[in-house]
Image (tube, rainbow, N blue to C red):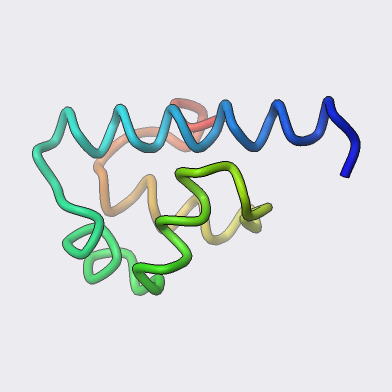
Length: 71
């Protein structure tokens, strides 16, 4: 993966972790509320996974935030 692409994935991961922590939600709670595997949440937060727009939308709904706040 190109360096710039990895940078964006890390940015999304960091934003996700900050928003989840601000809500006091564990990775497991977010996984349960968004119907996404906990391992996927972990990989997204680490910047190791390129999530689809639908995955990000499910996460934003579970966190009760706008999609734009993640990206």
